[in-house]
Image (tube, rainbow, N blue to C red):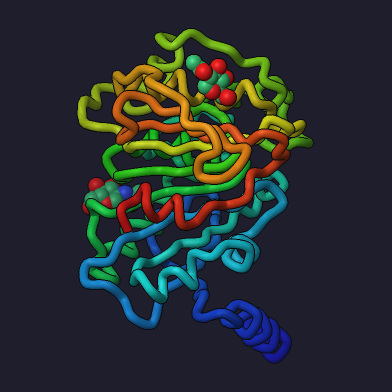
Length: 292
Ligand SMILES: *[C@@H]1O[C@H](CO)[C@@H](O)[C@H](O)[C@H]1NC(C)=O
Ligand SMILES: *[C@@H]1O[C@H](CO)[C@@H](O)[C@H](O)[C@H]1NC(C)=O
């Protein structure tokens, strides 16, 4: 037993370090749902480094998201740390449907993710004012939930092909298999005041600022349908107190429309014409939005 376990451990470590170090961390604090914590620390760490929490989609893993995205190679130039956690339940989707998952310090996935951030801040003397979150699909859904439940932790967020915070509330699951499908199908439409109350209820009494958001969605997304972009923008424009200002076509590339709220410093959407699920990760846009 011992031999085969250590063989498997060294095998997975070898796979994980192909493009630089991705290391599994254990004993990092309260982890009520049993998430896996993988961390990528660049060889040249910045002074008081920033932290990006990068969340995979359903059926994904932290190891795969690390391979699929360019955060680890960019961190070698910029010196930030990336956390690539793995959800092991509900087809590896994030818990964005339950009451506890949509609350603060209530035993959901979100709480384990915050423990990873706490651990990273103290272990690497990271800058608590430079903590960011991003994700794809279910990871974008969780990005919205973290913005609502832990607005004091994150300075900024970007995400790809997700839904508003609380959109999946009450569904029996959060995966394409286990959920009731209403939110993903674009059938959960609320007024701005309703969406704002959903966010406020996630951290009652909080009066501080909320993270800024840049959120991407493809018009040809058949899995998480396009109305979810407008619902996210409705929600966060209400929270931020900004309104639609103007569109900038073909930004950051041909076929993408940048939808600018207010002066563009707190909320932007990107609608990608003809792009399906999920919109490819735009790491350089993410880093610019984060100020890294
Ligand atoms: C994270 O750290 C903050 C500040 O020390 C603390 O208040 C909070 O309880 C911690 N959260 C978790 C989930 O460990
Ligand atoms: C801005 O762009 C979005 C996405 O393409 C579109 O739905 C909306 O109608 C546009 N608004 C204006 C005023 O052009």
